[in-house]
Length: 105
Image (cartoon, rainbow, N blue to C red; front, side):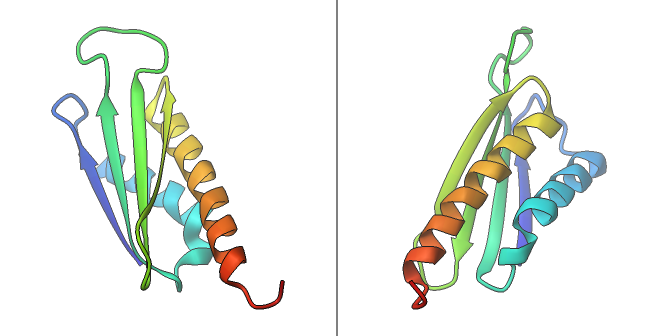
């Protein structure tokens, strides 16, 4: 499973941001790695230079093998919380999608 991290002009996509993003994806979505080809992480500062609550938006898009992409997003005050929230939501959506395909229902 490939992990791709994208940031906007207000979030510096340095090595630390990539490291935190990859760790969040592996922690929450790692057990899907054999069913996914890629996960794209998009980080955006919605307020740009202004400050305010929940101004960081993380959108995660999972690419399951042979299926359409599945996405989720979460808004939070910092990057770690936004990543964790988006990963948790995406994990729920992937669990639901794969459970529907599971023949053991």
